Length: 143
Image 1 (spheres, rainbow, N blue to C red):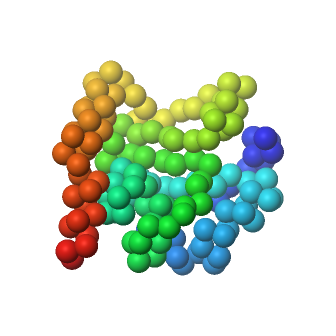
Image 2: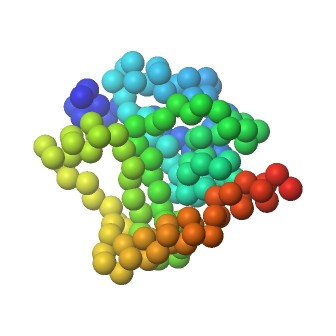
């Protein structure tokens, strides 16, 4: 994959900067055509916090309406994953994940230790059990 040999990337925050970027999600095609990697910063907005019914902010349009998303190559998740515990994660395509086998290995300041990983699993379980993504969608519709 070309991206592993270059420093080419395009990162964007799906909410705060999404529609201010010229071309919006259309930029992904241009970045990929140049050999770049598209990264969605979902540290603040991920895990259903946007009320669009999905897991990620990039799954909705500028008005919050569902649309067919253009999926990034990498998604970063942080603060909401641990509900206060210091943990973060990266969700990526299989091709990018496999590229780490050749190095450099993935490093994260808030990578998983047993306690924080258990907190993240418990948070994901509660998010599903309580239907919080659907509740965020319903609350957003009321507002």
